[in-house]
Length: 284
Image (tube, rainbow, N blue to C red; front, side):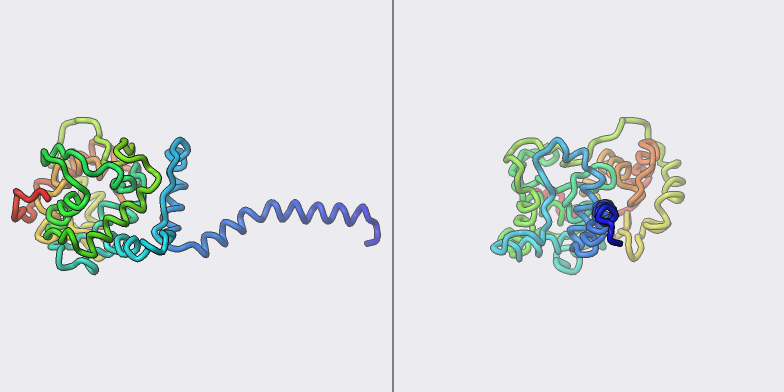
């Protein structure tokens, strides 16, 4: 082919083809090379892009923490994901932190986002309405261990507590101190009547395949009642909290239940037996 014009046309076709193919190739290559935490964050950002479009905030990959704090950040992240292995002496259930705080809490909540912890270190210490006192972050962490994990508090000066606090600080970076973080907590659903009897039927239909017909849990999914679950002092044992968590997050990866179904299922679960909080006065 000696015609310069044909060479030019061919070159232009090749360039246009490359421009069309590159974004797909680049994305595939990026997805292949990214770490597990990067993948979690990418998936969440894709789902919640509208939330972030109006905020000067981005989720922070634990693996990108500066070297001076990286060991603590990664330990804290590890505790969130593998709680029963890394802090087994402080847990009295078969739950792990990420059962409620998906991706180690490194999300912005919403549908299928679990209970977010991104920004939590920016709002503590704060007054806690439930416990009617000012609580700092270590105290709040220990309430989760004592109540939600049916365990015992971490020593405040332990390496595990330092790791968790450092991790929460890292995933909260960039947010202003003591200003509201819109995605923290669970947005309550409409107040409607409960029907625990219907909730039992809905539980069998929508929940039992993962959590067991008697709430005993399975290899992959946590127990919802019984000796191996959270105790009666946990936040999840409060109707409004549990129903909101179910509505926004269950079934996992495809939350489609109606508010009424979520409320009924929560009412049924709360009626079931579970461990009794050993020290009801524990507040820190």
